Length: 199
Length: 120
Image 1: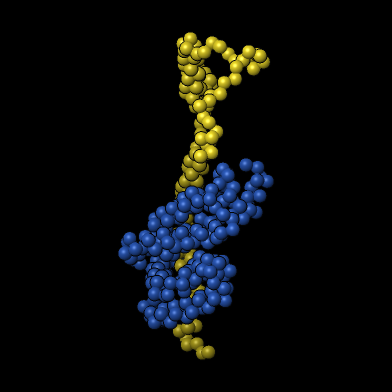
Image 2: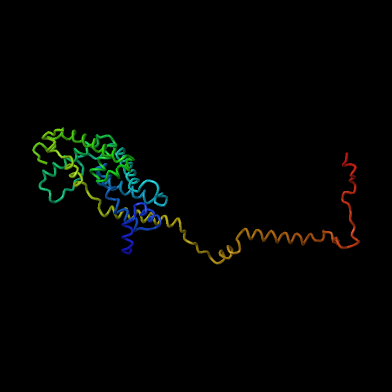
């Protein structure tokens, strides 16, 4: 592939890339995967909290995308929004099949090498587990908006498109979710080691 | 709004940042698997939309070029009709009517039918 083609693919919208793929361009699939896979994986991981399951869901979601490509209508949902819903449904199905998500203690952490100590890693782990557990108690839309905003790093505009809400409504959802989380986690402050913490 | 000391030390955004940093990153194997799926879907699609041309042996190709079974049936029927006409030619009237001949007789095929009968 020429350098110009790479640049043109880089500038193309997700929809345009999907149409290009349907017309037989493997390079378009490569660009689309590079662009969307990290976020799809993050969404699945934060929902399932299991790397292998998140990888399966990610691969399945992209397979569905490739198969729907020839019938894709550019005036329908955005590719990222479509993928979000596919992944969300797949995660819900998987959680139902497994009854519960993976035990929080089993969450696989891959701490960076510059972590100061094992005890700090353990403390981070218990705090993050408490965070996930608290998110699970939120109403569904609050939890979804919060995960997208603060764990998947999506913009409020994108979240609004996905949830079919106004940006103001998204801000309100996230704000309420954060207040609830703060109240819940403050109650576990001692258990989470915050009493002597100077964060 | 007043904040307690707890709120000052407890930072939710830091906790989100920790959660993000602890998340494993998707690896190259997943990337490769997704692209392999894309290739297989492309291959399937192309196989459906562009079937491989079948190479026929010469006699089948000739048969096809001549029109195949429909052509054969039509030709056979026409031939049989020709034979039938040939065989039954003796039974056909030999006298032909010449419209330009002064000797031709015009006969009324309904000579027994009186117009008076039609009038009731």
